[in-house]
Length: 261
Image (cartoon, rainbow, N blue to C red; front, side):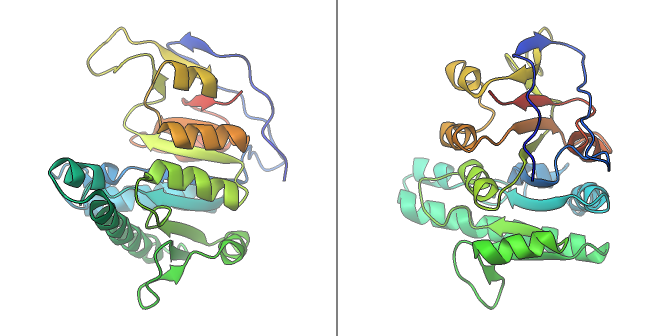
């Protein structure tokens, strides 16, 4: 497995795209970990899972699986329960985080159902053993599933309180040898400020891990950024709302922000 080619130094821009480096099949990244927030699955709802959004994400994943990309997936649980929010209201933090982990299992099972209904083979692996519901996380088994073209949905975070699903995504990406970590969001990359609140916000085509941390850009939590940096795993931030965006990203095309040194 080859690492992604080096990229130019970070510079802000408002409209640019990155040229793909072909591996003979048009793929720049052969094995990826997709990270989604639980809120991404709410769609137009105020709570829970919007079936239309679930199906939309499933079809995006199907498009890259059909291209031969090996896919892992981590989904947050914020559409159901956020451990940090529970703790801020007086709950014990460890108990609240465990509740949040269970919310991610619910989301993973929902996504599994959506994928299976459109013919995408997949497995759910949980960091908290629950054998009657899904497989336990076993690194070697997860890699074999991915090698056989199965999408692996990593649930229950890292299995430990005080760690976010961002950290879980970075950890699993490193453990199973992903070429890139894809962060699906509502915007088409990283901006120097909130583009919804600031129409003049500048967008980055490329940026370093160090600058993300120094400028506190809130792409992912600091532990996740540090782990991807230490593991030399690039992060690609793109809009999940743009049809075909995930297929473009794995080919190094379209609009996204690349985070790497």
